[in-house]
Image 1 (cartoon, helix red, strand yellow):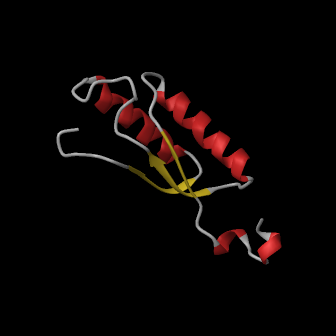
Image 2: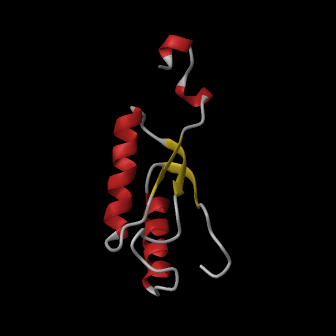
Image 3: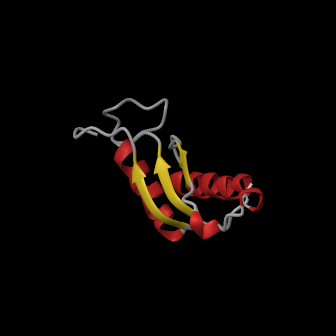
Length: 93
C-alpha cells in the first residue's frame, strides 16, 4: 500500500487495538502485538490501544481487572510501540 501512494513508513501513523484476556495478559499482549505487526506488514506500531479496561467476560468490579491491565501495560512498555493507552475507561475502573 505504501509504495502505491509513494509513501514511506515514517510518513504515516499506524494504530492498532486489542482486548484484554481473562488471564495471561503479558503473553496475550505480546501475541496480539505480534499479530498486528505481521498483518500490517510493519516493524513497529505508533500507537497500541487496549480496547476496554477488562476482559470481555469479566465483571466491572472483578479485582483481577486491575492486575490484567497492569500486566498488559507492562508488556506494552517492552514491545514495539511508541505510545499506548486504554480506551473506554471510567474513573471507577
